[in-house]
Image (cartoon, rainbow, N blue to C red; front, side, top):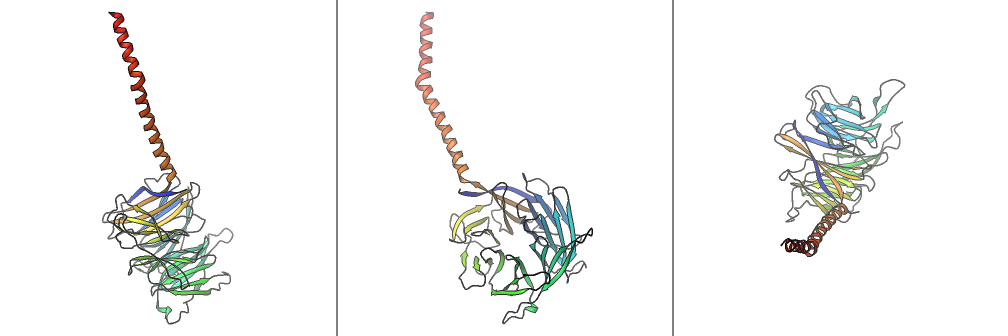
Length: 387
């Protein structure tokens, strides 16, 4: 059934500011039950089971290190929050309580002020990849008997053997789960490599494919082996098949009225064949198989702002799509939610309105043609009798 996206909710984060504590990331859990918003030292978790509440379900605050990345585990309400300096918090969330587990990257430091960013991504609910600088740790959650669980380091991904590049000197830019026991690492020199992890015990990584990417990898589609890239130099979003010579599919955000090109910011896969990309005052939905623009989603209040963060999910219990965007103002942050609505509902509503209008017109016609003359005749007859 055809559907369209409509803006439904807006959360104001009063502790944010574009200059000092901007929203750096938003992320939906695998079932879109929970939304996490990261800014400064804080991460707010919102429960989206029913209506959006006025206060978060819970808030997690670091004492001194800023948040650098957020991520949810597949098919699990388990959240990972990474901080500058190497501190990583893993939180398993339930309706009534949450369990927090903390560890430090192998090259991290608890010293306040150490500002090196950390990126952590789940490969499985109990397996994490944690990147800091040039080093990517692989950690596994282990619990023995009645002891508290620990995230043991089971190995480190080696520097990739890329011809013509000295990878030992290049920092990691992003880490992505790229399918069953497969990961994708992108580096700040534009190199992207994949690793296969057929075994974790013993830990024996197998080097996969490599490619030179122009732009920043925002998202991946493991089912199709494709990458979604924001190319700031060209002002485009690109979908390309990793490890092939296939030309990328290119997308440019344009206004709905004049089709004028807008600056790019961030993009995400919504499904295997749909992407969403930020513009100015809008986000744009495309079919990445046909290159068709499907819908311009125009913001109500953020007309002159670029989108800083995007995430998307699907509520299986309600058969409802969900897009979340974040925007930074000088005195606040705003998180905007979009949901899918069936076009048939809109058509039915218009039909009901037309039917009610038609019935109203029919009543007026019937009243003027039959009832009114009859009432006048009775009045005249009564007057003549009284005389």
